[in-house]
Length: 544
Image 1 (tube, rainbow, N blue to C red):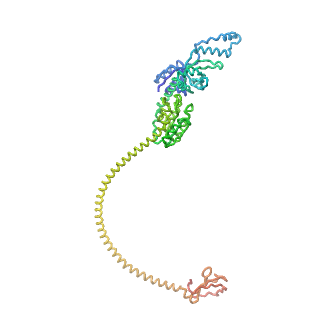
Image 2: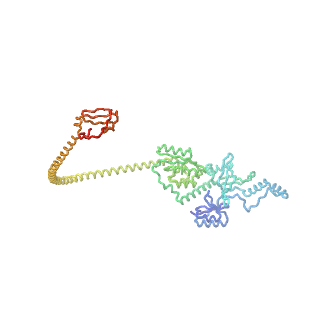
Image 3: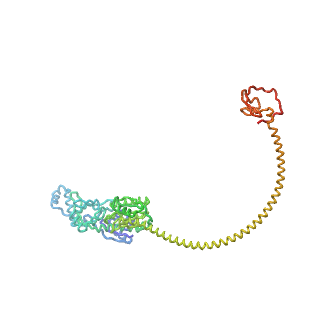
């Protein structure tokens, strides 16, 4: 982008892509004006020549002289003649007190201003502190200072009296004047410079306003921002985003309780919109618009909206300037979801509408578009489903024909296979029969030999077992106590088991005596130990 310059009072204003030349401009004493996005260089012939050379090398040039008048007395203007009575007072007191009274000073300043500005002049400035009263419209025309006091602002009180306002409305149109007479706009006014003596301040009595200057300034700022966005490739950033096939979560940014909000929501209800709307209120007019709209857009994106709709009702071209703010433009360019702008103005287009994904003229049209996305996606799905059904029918027909052909081929192959398998089975059966007969004969021979051996071994073992059994039977008979019991022998048992010694029982203790035909319950009355042990070889070995 090239550089351009124009002379503006005591400064040289430079606009364009100044980033690459900022160091050179600083050497000329330039300061950056962030509100207007330009550089201001103090006016001197040397600085003017340097700026002209720089802009020419950058492919630009001069834009002429800004249509403004500085409210300063010309250096060549003589001090106006004083009023006769004032001169008489001063001359009469000159010998004693050469100073002026405040009234005398104001009278001389008033004469000087009237001589310096005998006619109305065109003055440009920014509207500040605007107020409307019954007698007229009151505001300040302001201009930011350059140089060492760049943060300061020069202001002058301005008045449009009721009769002058009526004349301007008849000449320019009431609507056009209302559009440009707003806080923060640049005005070009035809003024009569007057001194308000009681307060010692200058007042501009405005008799005419040039609406085209304000609109031109707005258009220039808007075009400057658009060029900057285009140079960075940001004007198409949001347009390159894909629309969601089913936007079922919509973010809505509008004024709380506005007609735009109700029109958008009512239209969605009429069209039976199946999704949900997340509403984030933001003011749609005034200095807070950029900050609140950017904050609302950021919040809705964080809550996972599929797309965001920014909408407001109709308004003048001046009302739209808030949506030319760089903050809103960069926020839309950086958004990760499509942004639909329905600002509601048919003739003028703001920067937000230029760089958003799509512009709609009204909130109702925006709602129609959102629902149309769902309907288009549904129609596409229905079309694809019909195409798939037709394709599936064709494939089924082809498969049916192929299946019929395969069935015939498989039937013939199966018959051939069965015949082959039957012949193989017959051969295998004959082979198995021969093999089985041979193995059965061999096995029968082995079994006959085993039977003979088994019989011999069995007889030998049975004889051995019979001898052993006879020995065990004799042992059992010898141990059988029945014969001893029948002869009167017995076996005593106590609480602790069989009794084999006198020491095992106590006097009075109950014991049991085993007999051949039952048991006797006895009580020990006396224990008589034997004097010497005797051995009876006929005592039975054990009694149960």
